[in-house]
Image 1 (cartoon, protein in one colour):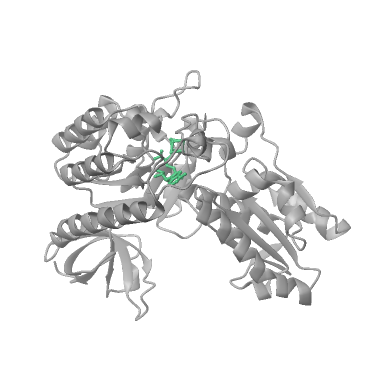
Image 2: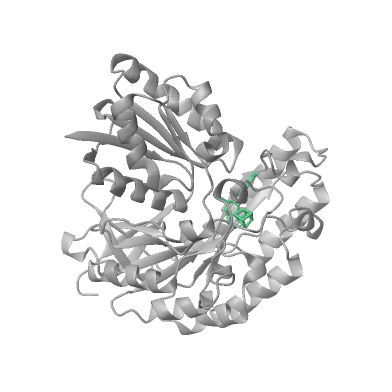
Length: 441
Ligand code: SAM
Ligand code: SF4
């Protein structure tokens, strides 16, 4: 028996890619292990959205060197966005690395691993594939016992937001066929999955560039009609592509959770223009207002970049104002990180690192206050919780999620896994709730 150890960085797309990597490695006789010391093959699936994420990969690789020094037959490989960007350069820089595989080359991994096993020749494959070839390479993963699953509906991105590396490392946007997506979800539901999250860099443009393919709202309706599926979510939505038809889905589809991640990035029209986002603050707020009108209980989350080149105190104040107006349940806040090849990397910037950090801290403080108020409103309420499994908190607790994707830990019998049960929220913590399940509620 041979063993592989796989570590995943970054977004949900990488989580799905890692599931595919695992399935492929099992196909050539490797079983997963939870420590690199036990493995014959170590793989890192990487993220390059921010400089920090990228540096982390090099730092991490260093951890495996002593293991390779002791066991030179250990194979070490890097895939994902950093691998795509760096390619052969990674092999040149890291002497103990054996394999580099790009974002379009995951399907080649079994052959690459076998080649290294047999010849001990190091290998790098980072070619972008054409559209037709990629369409046949959407993840094939094994059906697992989980209650919730991510399902990729599209790959790549054509938006070229001026700060973002994704279009450069993931290639052009393509949509997977709706027949395949619906088939996969039916199989998952038959195996016990109760919630799916449809994934893409911009799910709202699903099908737009493919002849005879359905639109995203149409796809949502089809998924919603699959018997046995209890909850449906999606990520990520680009605000410029939200249609009235999509907004209406929130008032009509039973399984669609009242929650949307709608990255705004900035509250300043000037900065949004420089970011090439394709909407202004008024457009964004109008869509938020319509979502709240159709679905009053909806909770929004967002991404915000602080310190984009040229951001002034006034621009930043406009971001704070927008955050106060929308009242996001949560926000992922990022300090701008220049990325090679992107348009923003060559824009002039006057704010100091200290000013940017201070803005970041102010935004975080405001958001934490708003998040605290929104989540605190759940206290003492009975909420339907989809039970996913045993909690990481230990103590034999179970965990599940509310419709708003909030984790709830509570005591209860194992048979509840896979069911939606009423749980009283007894304590609101920073990132999760503590609940009380009573059978007769
Ligand atoms: N496709 C998604 C969208 O448009 O909302 C987001 C994908 S990106 C992986 C996730 C988030 O990372 C973005 O929404 C943005 O806030 C942040 N991000 C991307 N590039 C960044 C950069 N160069 N510096 C800081 N944050 C960045
Ligand atoms: Fe990046 Fe913009 Fe595409 Fe999202 S939509 S992946 S932020 S380029």
